Structure formats: C-alpha cells, structure tokens
Image 1: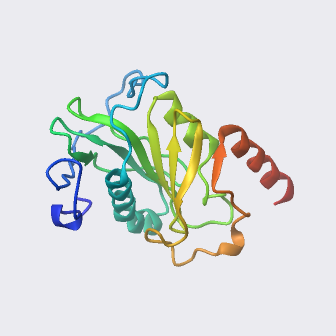
Image 2 (image 1 turned 45 degrees about the vertical axis):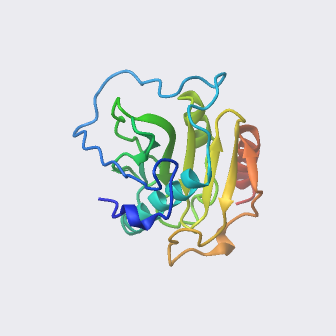
Image 3 (image 1 turned 180 degrees about the vertical axis):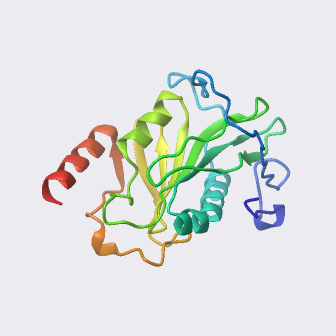
Amino acid sequence: MLGLRDQDFPGSRMGFRFVLLFVALGALVQCAPVQLGVGLDQPRPVSQDADEIAFAKAVLDSVQPASIDQNREFCGFIGVDASGDLVATTPRAGREASCLPNLPPVSMTVLASYHSHAAHSPRFDSEVPSVTDLEADAAEAIDGYVGTPGGRVWYHDARAGRTRMLCGPGCITADPAYDPADTFPLSQSYSAEELVIRDRVMQEFF
C-alpha cells in the first residue's frame, strides 16, 4: 500500500475526502496500447485543481523511499472514480530509467500518469522530465506528474505540450545522496523541443 489515509488530506473535490484506490491487476495484460485520454483536441475530463496537485504530490512522496532505495522508477495512473473521488493505481516498479504502469480499471477516468525518477545519479539528468516522458503522456492524451531524486515535482500539460515545475527541491522526499552540483541549471518549464535541446547541450558539454 501507499500508506495514505482519508485523514491525511484536509479536503477534496467530493465530500471533503480523498479515496486512494489500489488496483491489483496482477500481470500486465499483453495487448495493444490503450488510448487512455479523450484526445488532445478535447477538454480535460476534469479540470486540474489544488486538490489534485496535493494528491499527486502525496502519491509521489509515498513511492519516493522505495524508488530511491531500490534505484528504480515507480509508476501508475491518477484519476477519478465513478463518485468523482481522486484515486491512484497501485505503483508498479520499473527499471532505473523506465517504467510501464499497470493498466487502470475501466471504472477509473484517467487524468494523468505518475512516476518517480529513481535514485540520484550524475549519469542522468534526473531533475527534469525527459522528452520521452512528455511525449508518452501526449500520445495517450493524458497529463503527467514526475517526482525527481532531489524532491522536485513536475507536471506535464499534454494539451499545452509543456512540462512545468510545480515545486522545487525537497517538496517531496529527496535522495540523501542528491547533490545540486550535479544538476545543470533548470528552467521552470519546457516544451518537448526545449527538452531535446537541453539533452543535446548536456551530451556536448558533460
């Protein structure tokens, strides 16, 4: 379990409560990719608000210790159930630089993906989302939340085609080994094209 309870959250969109849904799907269904969103040309099913952001931060914070200790990404989906309550699928463990979440239940309206960025390593530009992260969410027509080893949280706005930093270092649990000196200077937001440029600069100079 993620270890989150109703009383951990002071309010929510429906009835002033949060419900965290744990979905045990077993083995991942081997089939063609599922189109999760309604389409980038359509409005978001539920508008993002402060409750959703707080919920996403809490979900990411709950997976950070295992993600750091095991040096692997953890991932899943955030959405709402039939009652309109915020829910999240059980986090699935991935690899150091990749993660494939379990499929969400049909009763869940998916709003965003979530994933952590494993432990701190100077080999990876882990304090920003990758262009693959951003493009993967856009391909599924959903938004995304990313937690970094330094404790930052980023939000992918799929319709805007940008990712932006919601909060800085230590916003969620950070890797004790995190060294800010290993992080190339950051902007507050990036498009996919800007992430590609950043990656090229990193490869050329580091």
